[in-house]
Image 1 (cartoon, rainbow, N blue to C red):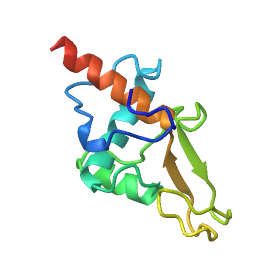
Image 2 (image 1 turned 135 degrees about the horizontal axis):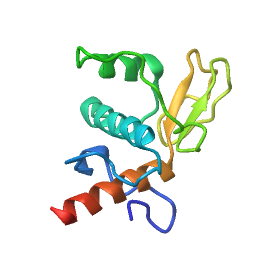
Image 3 (image 1 turned 90 degrees about the vertical axis):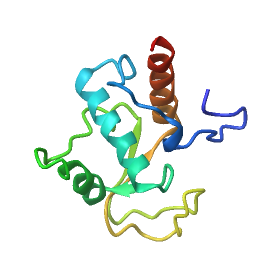
Length: 128
């Protein structure tokens, strides 16, 4: 499990090996595709599970040359990605937030998201 008994993350995005679609990780095909994109985004960015903006993920997503308009596909409503709207006061966190007011809507990876994608990737790697 990528979370220790104190609730701290013990896995980085780079340690998640996505060899194929994140099958059976969120119970919805489109949600799993969005999760795959988010893991690849975190890996490419190289800043761990640090929060991001929609502009950040859209820039990465549209680099494929074929895609635009990234959709979270139930990751927010399912509680796997946390959305903090623009203008909201934030606390100082392990992610380095300054405790100020957000100037853009910010998205956070949750522990549940990381656990599900890590488990799905590990299961797929074990089958190979």
